[in-house]
Image 1 (spheres, rainbow, N blue to C red):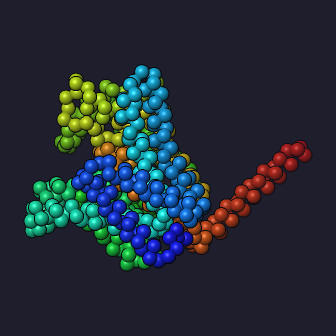
Image 2 (image 1 turned 120 degrees about the vertical axis):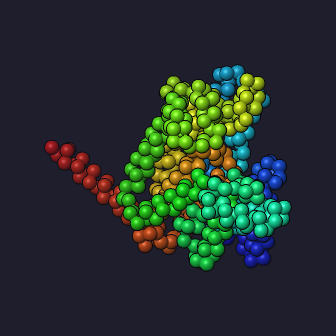
Length: 447
């Protein structure tokens, strides 16, 4: 189903969207003021609202709003909890406003993803990729022009051969943190999502791989590879109890991450890294400094969202050379405390998967599980919780996948069953369970 009925209007709209994406992701390449991309977010949201009034598609609008709520809930929880902390500490209005800005920016990111899917449906991902590639390609041309094409290519080859151990000046300029993690999402998406046109899928995958390796973050490579392998394993294994699997994985992941925080706080993590001669790249200093800022106990309620950045930029006693922890788990725990931290982990890794599996069958749920693996892996060494590209794209990818299932009743899953057949089978199981419960109840009455 298309919002844009006429072909010329559809092509013009696609071209305008790609142009907006070029500007948006050129901003994510640190070439434009940071607020530009958030302005474009709101522009696309306004565009979607206008098209809804002109040609409303109620089912798709409800679909997009449902996913907005599903994706925004953790950030809303962080903000409400932080407001309570700020009020209890009698913080100033300016302090509260600064702390709230990141939540507002993330709201515009998720609204933008929902609006783009409403406007372009299944075409959203390739159109977004086109804008990303042109923006990142423009930066690559600028870097190659300054360094020389020969130097650019030779440094790129050395980067690949040495697994980013030998990084020249040109490749350092291509290490665009915000973009490279977004390209990782694209690599995973086109590695696991079956497009109607296999040639288009191959081209999109190769483009994504090119820019993903140009930026080359070592933590992202095993994360993307592991996500793709995990998806294909799930599709072959076809676990019957995906909810139980998601619950077990969420609890196991939460426990391991909590243990990781304990290792950091106790100083064992830094000691082990030093003994193994692992270069933590200044993280040992940061972790040691902030390890006294929190307690690993249910009584620890946090210090409010954005506390770390505010403390690092405004407290005169702070003397380190960075304003971020480069560890999302530690930073989030310090800011929102024990209970919010655990709710966030379990909601992301368990509850959201339940909702997707219940409404859109197992395959999109598998996709969400592997995207979670990729995103949560990047949290170990970088500040990707609020990065633009990765947060927009992985949510957009899941929404597009679920929309395909929702709007195509004859879409087949890995077990070659249509969505209607899957829903019918589930309803039969529910009816059978009710009948068994009724029979058991009648038996007890008779007894």
